[in-house]
Image (cartoon, rainbow, N blue to C red; front, side, top):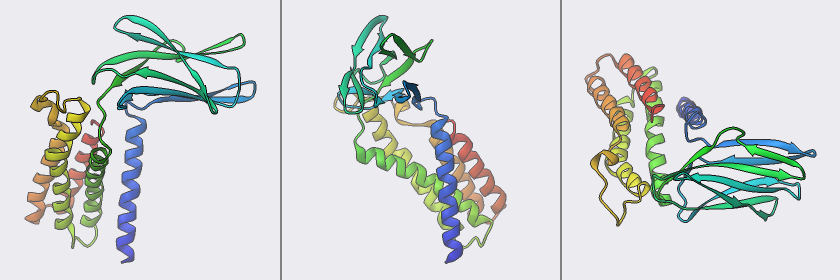
Length: 249
């Protein structure tokens, strides 16, 4: 029992660390930062994707009073300014929503007395709008993806220990990825593209080739493992391939 707890805890920690690295290195990870004005902190976050139903809200968090700011936006070659409004402990600006897949470029201009702060200084952040995805679907998509990754790691640890539950773990891994690919991901992407009640998205938008490749890896691995051939080698290759492909998602 103690060994089981250690193996599951190790699997969870490994998946958490891999997921964290994937998120912070993702091209859609927001730009964040903090700088000081008269000894007080001013913090900002510039998102690169928006799933909100009505608008994108950007916040500047600060305890200092008297700062002014606006968003400088470029959309379809047109430049526009959107002013921030004061809220508790900072400022808030709102960008009206756009159609799923549309993009804008934006940056923050902060003014305090005679000082001007441009964020980023010499470039713009690209914000892509997507359709709103219901929370249950987002949660299920997350659970199935990371559940599959968790079972992948657990299968590897099982292959190098007692191997008693390895076939069961391989079966669960395949089942999680099949459910994700066939049911949940197509529904997730249909909402993301704003296609619900509007149009039927093409099959290419409903199938993720990288997720399908991960499933293919595990089906091939299952054939070898269920026939008790090269168990440790095949499981190791399958897990390494899974996480290499995962970082390409």
